[in-house]
Image (cartoon, rainbow, N blue to C red; front, top):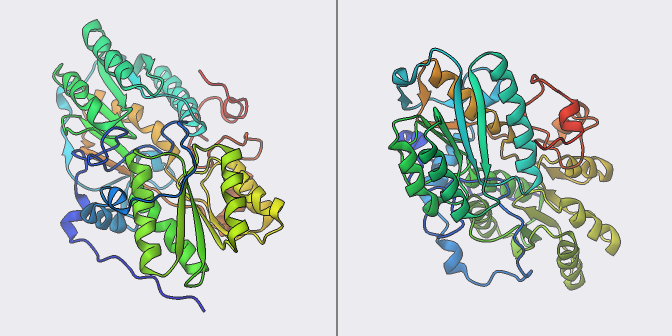
Length: 415
């Protein structure tokens, strides 16, 4: 018999449209966060169970939790066949002053392409760029990659500003607090600024683009595990690294629900290292049965499953991600699973936002994109749609109607 999930209280209607500019992705200060990237870096931590509930509590924000709880079932404006253009109705930005008469130059300050999620998005973004260049919307996109370094990205943004040849700025911040002043300097140029994926502590951007967020991920995944486990069952939570807001919020939401529903959960930082993941799972299985595995990102999901196989243990109930390696292993094993999504198709949206901005059309001030997990019933469709894609590819990349599909993604051509 399954036990009932204790649901969070619903937010008031106005909270549904709550802006989150003031508290977004940070790798610096755990008190500064709300929304951020799917996998932010490859930094490795020694695998050690978390022992500081007070420190973790800093990441929990009830108001934002309630907002994202409701946004999971919100009505999105736009065509569901174009999820990268959908948004939750709310405040719009008038962009008439930016209307252009010809192709314009975009300047992109990117945090990094240091992991498969960001690499998949970067490929998609470049194919979207080619399409808009063919349409005469964008002349070129000059890109500087910060390699996951705050100081480098600050210098990149300041370079673009001093160069003076940018008609618009796109910024995927490396971290929240450190990048805020640089984003504000870009805004002070009077040119449109598009922030996406991770946020900063200012609302000066023309639009801030992101999927629903980390709390939504944590709620979806914890509810799935709770629905498929019994009270008192044990879950091992595998986390990539500390200090990244969207990752911390995923765990903060999941931990809250596990505690409320009598699920024993122990969490470890893994650095997404397959060897460490296997060691952690093996050690936990040596202590007794493990009924569930929760992950804050899909990196290393296959290694976790293989640890159960090597130990001779029954497969766990498990949440991974929409990375192809997990979807394939999930199908192969028949385990009870869910693939949460931090919508990779968002990498198209900044350039499509510029298309609207250069046409003088309104854009959402906070552009919240859909974020819907892949269920077992949907898995076969996504496997078929992404047949031939490499393991590091993400099923909901949203680039099927772009130039170069599918070969560019199959060949993993990183520009």
